[in-house]
Amino acid sequence: MLSHLEGGEVSYNMPGALIIEGSLDKMRLEQAFRQLIARHEAPRTRFEMVDGEVIQRIESGVAFSVEHVQASEEETQQYAQDFVRAFDLAQAPLRVQLVETGPERHVMLYDMHHIISDGVTEGIIVQEFSQLYEGKELPPLRIQYKDYAVWQHADMQSERSVSRKATG
Image (tube, rainbow, N blue to C red):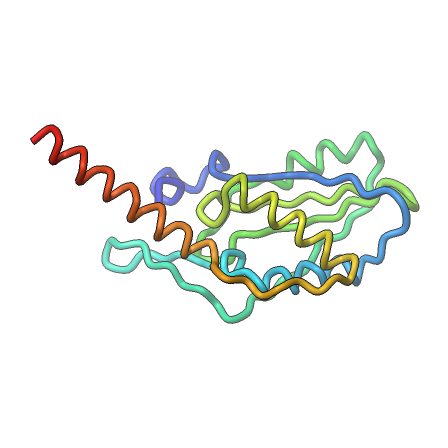
C-alpha cells in the first residue's frame, strides 16, 4: 500500500542475483519458474484500488517469460541496475532476466515486490527454483504466503488488544 501511495518507488523491491556457471538449459530454467509460479499464489497476485481499498487478486495463471540478454562482465552491473525498477502492482510482481556473460556463465537477476515476499520467502523461492530446475518433485504446499500474512496480522491485532487492555 505504501509503495502505491508513494508512486511505486523501488524501496520495496527485493532484487537478487545468482551466478550460474556451467551448462544451462534456458528452456528448463524458464519451465522451472513457470512451475514455481503455478505452485505459489504470491507470484500470481496483483493488487488494485477499489473505492479507496486495496484489493488482492490471485490469478489462476500469468504470462511469464525470462528475458535473455548477452553482455560482457562489465556491462552486467549496468543491466542489474536497470533491471530494478518500480512495479506496477496491478500486474503480477515477479521479474526474471538472464544475462549471458560467456558460453557457460550466466547471471540470473530476479526481483519481487515486498508485498508478496519477505526474506524467508525469498530463500524458499530460490531453493525450490533450484530443485525444480534439477527436475525434482516437490511436495504439495500446506499453506500459502497469504495464509502466513493473515496469521501474522491476526497475531499483531491480538497483541494490540492485550496492550490496550493492560494500559486501559
